[in-house]
Image (cartoon, rainbow, N blue to C red; front, top):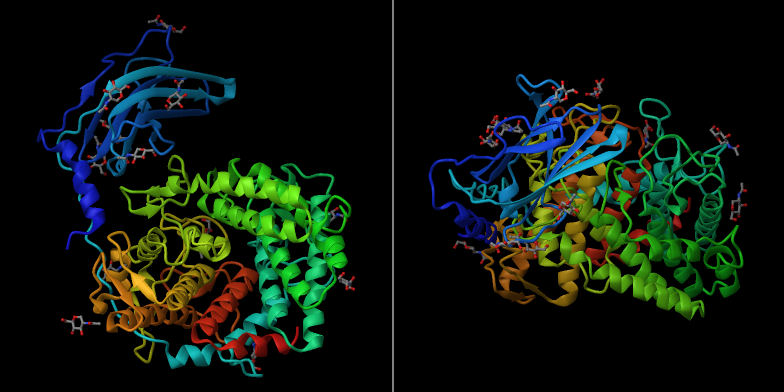
Length: 631
Ligand SMILES: *[C@@H]1O[C@H](CO)[C@@H](O)[C@H](O)[C@H]1NC(C)=O
Ligand SMILES: *[C@@H]1O[C@H](CO)[C@@H](O)[C@H](O)[C@H]1NC(C)=O
Ligand SMILES: *[C@@H]1O[C@H](CO)[C@@H](O)[C@H](O)[C@H]1NC(C)=O
Ligand SMILES: *[C@@H]1O[C@H](CO)[C@@H](O)[C@H](O)[C@H]1NC(C)=O
Ligand SMILES: *[C@@H]1O[C@H](CO)[C@@H](O)[C@H](O)[C@H]1NC(C)=O
Ligand SMILES: *[C@@H]1O[C@H](CO)[C@@H](O)[C@H](O)[C@H]1NC(C)=O
Ligand SMILES: *[C@@H]1O[C@H](CO)[C@@H](O)[C@H](O)[C@H]1NC(C)=O
Ligand SMILES: *[C@@H]1O[C@H](CO)[C@@H](O)[C@H](O)[C@H]1NC(C)=O
Ligand SMILES: *[C@@H]1O[C@H](CO)[C@@H](O)[C@H](O)[C@H]1NC(C)=O
Ligand SMILES: *[C@@H]1O[C@H](CO)[C@@H](O)[C@H](O)[C@H]1NC(C)=O
Ligand SMILES: *[C@@H]1O[C@H](CO)[C@@H](O)[C@H](O)[C@H]1NC(C)=O
Ligand SMILES: CC(=O)N[C@H]1CO[C@H](CO)[C@@H](O)[C@@H]1O
């Protein structure tokens, strides 16, 4: 079977048919004179790798040297850059160094021309460049063809009783859903903290997570909203509403802190809810979006429950009239004005253009446009609508045809994340899908990306080799943040699978199955076929076919989604210590829990996963029963 991935790669490798020997083009054969600061020395494009060396004058300590090139269709994009690194001092030439780069994934986009070499001498505030305009022809070995698609190690089918039991609601703590709810609420309004805040984890040293993070709090409060929405007991409903109103107030307090450095994109506050001003990755512009989403969802549910419009304006929406109480309008306008600015990602590591941020910002703007309308604020509504349209127009740039992947960020390789794969893309759908068919659960680019990202951890985490539990039931792939991750929960060595990212795959698959059940058919495309071939090998689905819900193939595809979703939950169950506490990560070799203890987001993600499973089975009593037991 020729997947579209291998077809794309074969297309690009057409550049290299001509020669068999790798041709290196020498440009500067000796150290340049003192009138210049840099010079391309040599380059080659062999076997799909773009290899470059350059002479760089040693003018200061901190140097950033970048080569810009055009892709296979002669276009310069932010992806088509190579960062050079120090190789050696230039032999026999004092004051000169040799720098180089070997971009082994250049073939994904192709290379036609070297544009320029740019050298930023950051300590002395100077930037130098050499214009190149050099044509590049591939030579030598062919670009690597597509790596063989991973063979599925199992084909679980249907929802399983052990997962139903693990998540079932019972009064004792045998239920992990009940544990997760109790332990999540133990991190909300902790003793001594400001009303409406959430501690990110029960961990004050190594690592110190005793802060109120804007993102983590909004995602936690989104679970509180879902409980509010489902509760039928008046007492429970009132208790959740009180927490959510306090959260709205806490968000307004954050917005008004006199020491914000990057406006509303400030990511991190102390538990007294005053700003953390130490060095940090800021801004993180997802926070204003996810906070507004949670509070608009709550406001809509509150109004539907006969809540007062005046209260919603005063305590949630109208930041103009009630700036110290109502945060949503201010956050929405911030998103409308800043969505195109570079931002740090949800892992707080890299400033770039991030798919996750764009998608949650889009959802905030789309929801905001209709919410503002319901608040009789049509000016704001049209501001938000226009921003949403402009943002939506940028989303297609994240799709990389050569890689058959939605890139987690659109720009040069950062942090050595050469695969461009990050589970943030799946989290983007979970947190940022606006329900309007734009990057939906059933979008074929989303499906193939989820498959590529999830399976990328198979060769990274040794614990992936343990594929069944003690009763022989299938364990899903242990999922981390991204395959190149080096954060181990306290420092940097080797990254691990996380509970919340493994849960994200489960929740994604439950929600994907539910979306298909709503639409009544599954259309398999060339793009999505690798997803189905991995997760549903026994269904024999073929590209170009649409299977209606009455067909056996449809039943088999849905059962496979269910089987794998439960397998991902089982992976979490397998690595959950006795007592039910979830930390941040589990060890890549041993599977033992590690990193921040009682990570609030781990509990929130287990709960949203359990809710997605109940929604798929049509069990409306599940979330209601959990909600009615109160806080
Ligand atoms: C370049 O400048 C250095 C330091 O000023 C000097 O030692 C060297 O001779 C110069 N080289 C040339 C080629 O002018
Ligand atoms: C790429 O663009 C350059 C500069 O515009 C042009 O000289 C060259 O012919 C183009 N190459 C291809 C393959 O289109
Ligand atoms: C660049 O890297 C590739 C893959 O690691 C390797 O095969 C190739 O030899 C390297 N090229 C050079 C010139 O170092
Ligand atoms: C080059 O970049 C343009 C603009 O993003 C894109 O449309 C085109 O598909 C790219 N070409 C290749 C071969 O990746
Ligand atoms: C180098 O090329 C890139 C990509 O076309 C362009 O954005 C940048 O301005 C160029 N730099 C210089 C100094 O010419
Ligand atoms: C926290 O805020 C809520 C909502 O405004 C309020 O009902 C509650 O009394 C506050 N709790 C404390 C301890 O101040
Ligand atoms: C909040 O807590 C931090 C850390 O303990 C402290 O440095 C700061 O002064 C406190 N802010 C206020 C307003 O009390
Ligand atoms: C999994 O086990 C196989 C066979 O023992 C081994 O070759 C492979 O390296 C292991 N994978 C990892 C990631 O350790
Ligand atoms: C994590 O990395 C730190 C810093 O390298 C190291 O000291 C620590 O032992 C590592 N922890 C684990 C569990 O590997
Ligand atoms: C897929 O093909 C296999 C082998 O031909 C067959 O046994 C199986 O029933 C097929 N599955 C479906 C869902 O049609
Ligand atoms: C569950 O109950 C056991 C036994 O009473 C206790 O040791 C454990 O801490 C409890 N776990 C939670 C999450 O409350
Ligand atoms: C970074 C890198 O691998 N650079 C290599 C490029 O090719 C030259 C030979 O032409 C090597 O010496 C460099 O190490």
